[in-house]
Amino acid sequence: MKKTNDTLCRLTPYWLVKRSLLRYGFAFLLIMTTCSVKAENTWYPAEVDVWTPPFNDQRRREQKLYTPLDKAQKKWRLRVFIPHLKDDYWLGVNYGLIAEARRLGISLSIYEAGGYDQLAVQRRQIEEGLKEKPDGLIIGAISLDGLNDLVKKSADEGIPVLDLINGISSPQIAARAAVSFWDMGYQAGSYLRRLQENKGRPLKVAWFPGPAGAGWVAAGDAGLRKAIEGGDIEILDAGYGDTGSAAQAKLVEAALSRHADDLDCIVGTAVTAEAAVKILRKRGLADRIKILSYYYGPGVHRSIRRGDITAAPSDLTVLQARIAVDVMVRILEKRQYYKHVAPRVMVVDRDNIHTWDSSTTLAPRGFRPIFSINE
Image (cartoon, rainbow, N blue to C red; front, side, top):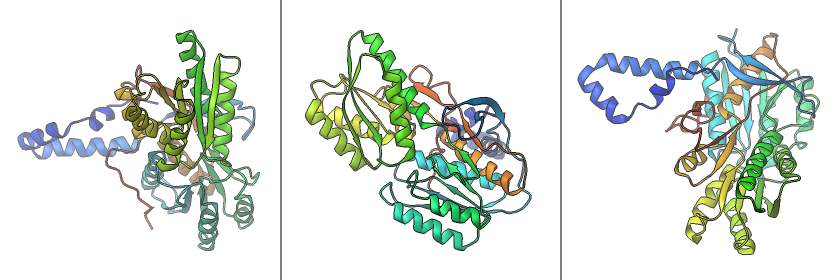
């Protein structure tokens, strides 16, 4: 990711803004406003992986630099469907979608189903959306296979569908903006291998990859298990559950009830990791059991800075959403586009958390969900 001075704009503390406004007035306000606009609009060029050929299961990819369109040719109408907004991962997606739609000058509406147990709701939302005859659909799918008939219906009606982040198995998607969650799991597993090697003794782990049936969960599970294969690491406990805090806390509590004396590490979703921080602290186990998340969010970010969470790979969520919107506009305008593209996964820990560009992954502080723009 290209570095700019935008980080300085984002990190300007409130006391400095207030003092400078009093001393320098309008000139400082103009500078800060310019910084804010610049930060939202200079996310590119971005380092990406392009799957060659598209959608290949062997993860054959080429590195490219991604530069989006300057503006859309017309005010295209897009409908976006995501699983939920119960954790900050999807808040980052929300921000990236809205910011890129605003930059390109298109219309975009977002619908959230309420959780990974709400496939029927997401199906109904998509069916209703198709009745509005939008120009394109972007779908963060609850189920790998459960929307395939609706993808076909959309394609038959001439409405392209882009698979965003989670994975859709239909061969009729027009494009995919998604890292391989196999990579996310593999990076988390590789970090476990390094921890185990540094300890010089076996490592015992509890592993909570997310809701059963979601494509990204199956991929993440396979990646982590591949990474620890042959290492002296044992998964003592594993369980599936919705990425709500109550569901993940219940899984963590159950694992600790069975294996508290033996566990070395808890690994799971961002929600799992955040729940584990509180639970381990309450049980007096925070100094002994390490926590890894296998994706990123603001809570994970803060906890890595504090030392409560050891590490987490980031799939650069905001960039994935931005790229998805740009790819869909390219499809509609019959321009050249990558059929399967995503930012490159990177691992964040206390060694690099102060130097990487968190705007690629996290919504700005204070951002609240926005469900439509330019309607």
